[in-house]
Amino acid sequence: AADAAMYAVKSQGRNNIAFYDAGLTVQARQRVVMESRLRSAINLGQLYCVYQPQLELSSGRIVGAEVLLRWHDEQLGQVSPAEFIPLAESCGLIHQLGLWVLQHSCHQVSQWLQAGLPAFRLAVNVSAQQFAKDTMLQQLKQVLKDSGLSAQLLELEVTESALMTDEVRVIDTMHQIRALGVRLAIDDFGTGYSSLSYLKRLPLDVLKIDKRFIEHIPAEQDDKQIASAIIALAHTMNFKVLAEGVETAEQLQFLQQQGCDYYQGYYFSKPLAADDFAALLQNSGG
Ligand code: C2E
Ligand code: MG
Ligand code: MG
Ligand code: MG
Image (cartoon, rainbow, N blue to C red):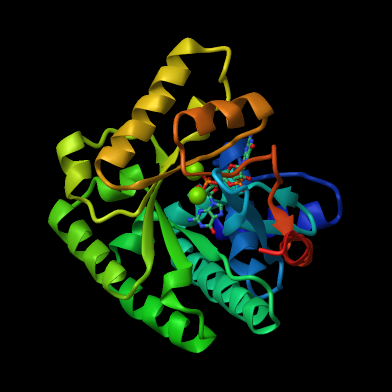
């Protein structure tokens, strides 16, 4: 497989894709190529972070930003995280990538604050595997120390499915993270199968409604009801609630009526390059 990957990389480099290993399907070959290129992406400086503003609905202020990883490869072009994150998870690279994002974004935000930009909270995605590893807490402490970022300004986003394994350990880890002052958000909420009794036991700060429940508002009556039920549920459990994927004024108005706390989405801004985000934050005056 490694030889096939090398060959594929070389042949792509000549803009001439020819495969002679008949043992691999086209998809499998692409995967192997992508994996080998992703392995070197960190060292080649091909990874970078973009920042999407998170706003408070009541005030319209930027109160946070979600950092999202981007990868530009010379041959493959721009590769979506929807493609390379699952790949990184399946080949074990996610630990390295995840740590890089955490370090890089915490340092970035810390620098911005030192330069006088208004304070906001940084939200970082953490994959299930990172979350399950016992080195995570130590790494988190180290990154906070090295970057000088206040723990109160950091939030970790974990998907519902990441919280579904090994309940006791997961809850213990969550308590330890929160003891540092770091906040916890459950990402893509509504797409997993967590029971209400489990959810109630989780030490969470924020629940993020998955964008699939937002995208068809106001046309879909069902989605409106689901979104408002999730907002009510979150508040009953004393969690804040954020709506993802807000693209229209109608959606925003609906969410405001339902008492949603925060939102993010193309309606206000797409994820921005670091400099553009800093400029936006500066101009918004916090
Ligand atoms: P996510 O964490 O749920 O991030 C939200 C995704 O929705 C992002 O896609 C964002 O660009 C997109 N989005 C934001 N507003 C809108 C909108 O109004 N409309 C639509 N259609 N989409 C919107 P992106 O950047 O492609 O990332 C996809 C997923 O990849 C993320 O979903 C997350 O699960 C994963 N991901 C990205 N960066 C990282 C990372 O650093 N670590 C880990 N573990 N996962 C990451
Ligand atoms: Mg997220
Ligand atoms: Mg999400
Ligand atoms: Mg997601």
